[in-house]
Length: 91
Image 1 (cartoon, one colour):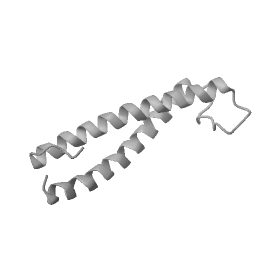
Image 2 (image 1 turned 45 degrees about the vertical axis):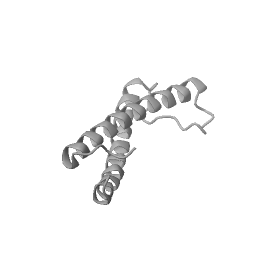
Image 3 (image 1 turned 90 degrees about the vertical axis):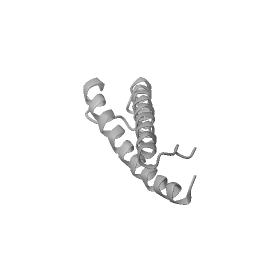
Image 4 (image 1 turned 30 degrees about the vertical axis):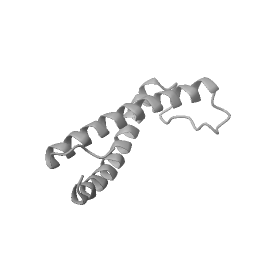
């Protein structure tokens, strides 16, 4: 892989990572508004007034959403990189 290709991949990776994180947060917020028990905001794990069930459910949903969005964004980024440079992205 050339130095130019590698230098293109780093900013692309950072930008898509930030965008993916923002997207995952927005998706999780929308899901939690629909499934949360009268809570517009997800529970803070340090808030002991929240039930363990609620905190674990929020963490599980958030982990699922973040994992899926991360995989989709990384995959799309790799395809975009390969389309522009005609090389596989670095591992």
